[in-house]
Length: 462
Ligand SMILES: *[C@@H]1O[C@H](CO)[C@@H](O)[C@H](O)[C@H]1NC(C)=O
Ligand SMILES: *[C@@H]1O[C@H](CO)[C@@H](O)[C@H](O)[C@H]1NC(C)=O
Ligand SMILES: *[C@@H]1O[C@H](CO)[C@@H](O)[C@H](O)[C@H]1NC(C)=O
Ligand SMILES: *[C@@H]1O[C@H](CO)[C@@H](O)[C@H](O)[C@H]1NC(C)=O
Ligand SMILES: *[C@@H]1O[C@H](CO)[C@@H](O)[C@H](O)[C@H]1NC(C)=O
Ligand SMILES: *[C@@H]1O[C@H](CO)[C@@H](O)[C@H](O)[C@H]1NC(C)=O
Ligand SMILES: *[C@@H]1O[C@H](CO)[C@@H](O)[C@H](O)[C@H]1NC(C)=O
Ligand SMILES: *[C@@H]1O[C@H](CO)[C@@H](O)[C@H](O)[C@H]1NC(C)=O
Image (cartoon, rainbow, N blue to C red):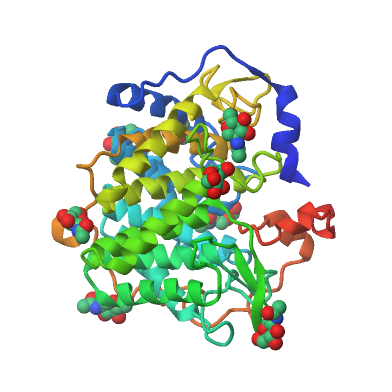
């Protein structure tokens, strides 16, 4: 029920404002100031550092994974702008949600946690290692070790019993979606494996990255034209019931991992081909031909992107910027895509809330659609997309991330991840199945259930 509120209700609550976030493309000071204004509006949604609240959580209706995505964005924000305002809350959130088992499987989340949810937190930890984000005290989990712990758990969950391999969407058998093998979960595994390979130089990670990409192709989720589909449902042991919706973050997570593998392999032709192929497919699907501005092709123009989906194009932006850093031939085309989108995003950050949804500076609330001034849709996804659009234009040919060999200081633990509930067998005997109502309330990150919504199925009505 909550899923359409943002778009349907917002226009009447919010007035467009003549102010907007000012941005001069290519001017670093202007870009940092614009990013700072948008980040301020974003972090006003965060309540996890208030007394009595839980560090790392966003308030309703934002799910746990999106908070992980947000802290990943904030690490890059600091790395690109030098503004450390949010570093402390970011560290606190990541360490708290890493939890006692040091693997982003906090007991509060395990009953609904999917591989993709865990992945967005793990990728934030990986970004922290790659950017030399300040290391936690030595008695706390370390960024690299956290990424390795999640990698190890993914490897232990690789399931050859159906579809010739792949990660299932869900970790636990009793959860809806356990019979779905999806691209974003395998994309998290792929992206992490490629980046761990680059950071540590350990070939095991590179072998996994190679294997995961090949699996996505073998099952038809990545096509020869580099269309990238959402996932496949296992039915009677066969795996040809494919959800062919294309979401921008799936292109993003795979192009970035492929770009990192391009770097790891010293520019292997196969990875060049994959990077260029996904880039072309990304431009064709998600970038407006006349304006060059990114949009969520499946749902944006038709106005039914849900809360989760309203944040996806920000991650595509993040991963394209990462691609530009890894594969120099992609720098110019990607910079064009990023700059056109940044200008449009900043123009759309001109809302003023009439109700207390947005607490940033008046006249700077960011909308979701960027083909018009402020469209009335506000939230964490809208702010995060616009922040990403603006700040990733700061990526230059000279910027790069570190590795263990080139100044990276984060400490690893190649054997991590064995102690949590995700490490060993499935703890279905200690965790009771969740009532359907609760599961619906907890929501689903992946888009696999979206057609239910389009078809007006019982799933939304519950
Ligand atoms: C929580 O963090 C936000 C963002 O940094 C800050 O504005 C706010 O004052 C902090 N609240 C508390 C209680 O520390
Ligand atoms: C972050 O925490 C450190 C240590 O507790 C403190 O010295 C520093 O002032 C804090 N920075 C911000 C921006 O709150
Ligand atoms: C789990 O929930 C409890 C109760 O709300 C809270 O105190 C605790 O900090 C939470 N733990 C995590 C890791 O979120
Ligand atoms: C799906 O796969 C099964 C065997 O795995 C095969 O018998 C069936 O024809 C396939 N269906 C389609 C539509 O390809
Ligand atoms: C990989 O990245 C490093 C910098 O991080 C760079 O020096 C090197 O040339 C890159 N290799 C390839 C093949 O792009
Ligand atoms: C842009 O044009 C190309 C070539 O005609 C087409 O394949 C692509 O689908 C178009 N993209 C969009 C987003 O309309
Ligand atoms: C591209 O942008 C133009 C101008 O904003 C708009 O009219 C058109 O509908 C957009 N096309 C797509 C495929 O989004
Ligand atoms: C490389 O990574 C694998 C997988 O985590 C691990 O088992 C192995 O010990 C690592 N090797 C080194 C030299 O760290």
